[in-house]
Length: 325
Image: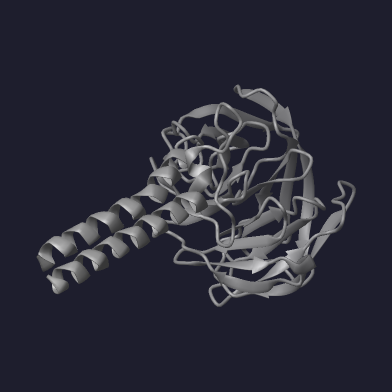
């Protein structure tokens, strides 16, 4: 008899817990931000990742040094490249390490790598409009010369604030680096000086702003940290759930801010999606305008809790009757 009670309780608990899980799966299946694998054989050293503003479910990436002036638009639902953009009007890229999209749907590419830790007296940033049509094409880009206020350094993280459009770089140092702030407006007529404004407690390989600009996610090879932006006076908020990857060098928020996607170098490399910390789950409207099953996670949890409570009442009632008899 005790076994019967235990089995019934287990079934009730399992059924109740399955309700929100099933609903969540229905919601997540409706978008393309659940992770994917690069299928393009030309993408062998993905070193940056950015969610498209104009094309839902598309992510921009690029190779490390040696590829050329190219960026790739990848459909996250299939992993296939849907456009390769050739940058025109710039010099030969040296070591492209980061990509970010600003508030005016402009793509920023950071040619900021320096594996020798200070060989290059200056580095470059390229800016181009995000193409409205996804097809192989050549786009004219603007090139900016960048120097650091405290001398040359290696860096792999470049981010553009989604509200102000200001550009920031995080240098890459094993014992932790710094967040560098660029001028309010980048200039093509002179050198743009980036100045350190806050320490970053990580060997940073990429970073990304949340869409609302309130959080800064920074990843490394073996972990990550997210900060409250706080107007640039960043405050450490917690650790990121960074997946173990071969050479993890990319991170991006999904457009709705509910997911963080992590990319890695290597042919046929996987992009892994994780829930963004401290963010509400994505809502997916149904065809009739009401929330889809996945958007009702809280309701499902309440229903599940009620089912468990009712089941326990029944169990205890039956047990009490049994004792009386």
